[in-house]
Length: 411
Picture 1 (cartoon, rainbow, N blue to C red):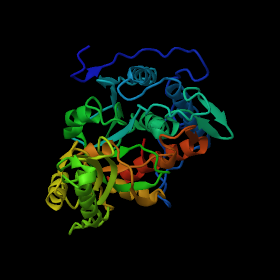
Picture 2 (cartoon, rainbow, N blue to C red):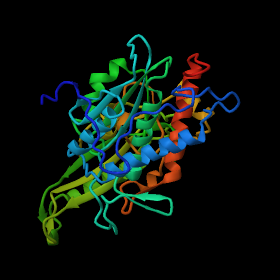
Picture 3 (cartoon, rainbow, N blue to C red):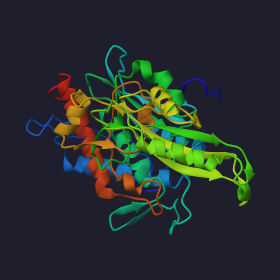
């Protein structure tokens, strides 16, 4: 299949093999409307308890199936197929770009603004210290255990359910659902492929990552520098040569003291940390080469290229960036999407971790259920209550954003 283009996926019925098998989409209320009237006081949605329970059961059912389907980065074909089938069984016509799954709301109008709902379905490989089967979804004391449950399966299933809930609702903006592959490795067939293809039609985005439903107004970019100090070899006993290790240590100290004049009002100062070093071949030879690695967390005060140039000017060693594409990302607190999240009770903060948001050239708010501290850890889990919180939070953001664009009621 030529995956260079966005390809439609024909709807296929979901196999009814267990209690989580596909069911047709249901209206949320007795009137058949797919959304409720906007809350008038707190600015949040008025959600019927039975509707919330149904959505939670659907979200948990999908998450259990995703956990049971291994999807390490670059090997997400099975979960891409699963997600396409899940959407198709609910009346959606999904598309594929490589292993990225794409769906549009009904009545999609390019003349209207478009809100992107995005998360990723790939995972890291399980750590060796897992004490349970990482691919066996297990619920214990309100926790759902499994690889990817927290990062970022809970966000993904909540966004899927949010899309299904509102895809037929007359909104002042389109909904575009993109479920990404290769997020954990920043691969060429993940956001690096779909962002250039879809960015012209996207006006704003919700990016689902575990933030405890706090609103991440920004996240730092990342540049990894491979540095090389060059000296001259000699016999250690004779004091000959130029020790490349000492040259590297001098440069590392310069980096510790390096100050950038401009500081981001949102992200603060640029952070520089030397994290790896290697030199020498044996104890009695002065090393003529020393390699060290520098982790640079960049901000919107400088471009990544400007940051690299400033570091190169400050040290004597060679410094080569592995990439400069992971850029800092900031969304203004006055943006309607941020205001919608704050009215729903979200706390603003700056995220210490990077995501596909850094590749997006449009305003994007990172927010989702779960705790970032659990990501990539053994015995990863998500609280079932956190999934419910995600469903309510995303619904409130959609409705509050619609209100900001002029829709007082939905449906």
